[in-house]
Amino acid sequence: MGQRPKFSIVIPTYNRRCLLQRALASVRNQTFRDYEVIVVDDGSSDGTWEYLCSLDPSVKALRQENRGPGPARNLGARHARGTYLAFLDSDDLWFPWTLATFSELASRHRAPSILSGKLVEFWEEAALEGIKAEPIAVDVFPDYLTSSRSRYFVGSGMMVVRRDIFLNSGGFDDGHLNCEDHDLILRLGSAPGFVQVLAPTTLGLRRHVASETSDHRRTVDGISRMIQQERYGVYPGGVSRARARREILTSHTRPVSLKCLSDNRVDDAWRIYARTVGWNLRLGRWKYLAAFPILALSATLRGVASRAVTKREHSHS
Image (tube, rainbow, N blue to C red; front, side):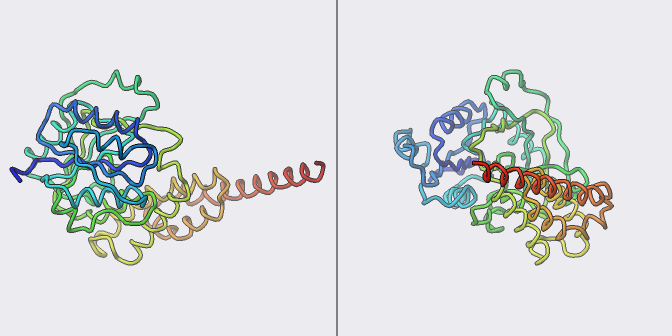
């Protein structure tokens, strides 16, 4: 089989043939070349599989029925040979120096379990033209949980994980829900060595209406799953590291509960608030604790007024 590559780049995709082409082009533009590429077609119906079959055999193409990005990444990881797994979503882009940055840091910091990149969000690719290579700057921690007060966001497209540690963890949750990346990083929370890239920017995160994260129902389901995981003691560290875990967890739950209010999904918001209120009390999140009930009441009144208007319109139609 030859020598193992340093990186296995795993790209899940679903009905994004045109965007996938751009993602693969950004991989081909890497200055660091010791990698393999694995693309997992998650049951696309837009010609993605036919496109993948037309590519050079150096791109390993796999296919599964539509099960979501987490299971697709797991399938790719099981076929990977690299020392590290580098995850790239098919609607996102890397910069030419991305893998070179991760390679340098993996060597410099003695093969840490997790490296996390720096992202910039964009709607149009022209917005990325001003992003330039910079000297490497990082924040280094004994493990991810130790970084809890820094509140570093580690999304799937930002994370580079040692393959052995990823496989031992069981990988991403197999459910078709969002926040599967945050769940994974918490399950890897005590794995030795976490490096957060502060510079250069390594990932262009594309914003568009068809992105997985725009499905708010799946986001609520994913957050609820994480709360349940913590309550069942799934995440590592025991009682001694509960505060660190809950600092990280509530940094995700608070904005989701507030987004539910802005979307008039008040019941979902209250469920998240009620299940995490004790954690937020112990962490001293007084502003959130005090503001949420007021915002919830306001959202409820908006909903009542909206339904009244709709009822009147129907009665006159």
